[in-house]
Length: 214
Image (cartoon, rainbow, N blue to C red; front, side):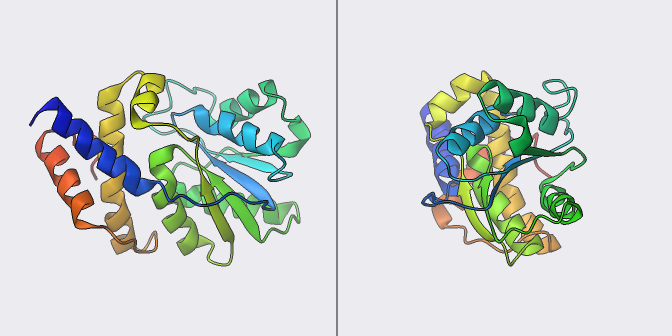
């Protein structure tokens, strides 16, 4: 399998996970914790565009983030957004979620505890988490009107920003598998998976990109 085929298959998975939702104003933003600080930066960009008045950054740590964000994803994301001019009072932090399902259930509990009623949200994630975030939110918070967003960028640029091609490709493969595995487990709503995406996934698995498989 050539490097060109590997990157072509990675591009197929990258494209599959991005939903292309049209941005519009929502009640809140939910910034999903991850290893990608670009989530916080894009959330700040959209806040300054006036797309939402309140941000919830949610996330504790995962094996892929504990070294990068030792004080927790929500804490580091909040600090970055404040550096970019978001007022601290426009941010709530949910610091305990250790997976995407808990990102939503604990965010909902946090908002309920503060008597904040919302009917719509912009979910901001790393680019290849969009579809899984959408499917998970639809399962755990079905009445919420959801728009998915992530920083617009090419796969090559994303790999350059993360500075770890192997990590990004392993994460892409792992997030793809989670689309059907989490639906089968009842954690997310089923999503269509086309043949080209499945073929690209299987070739990358066969080539050894298996570190994030479950």
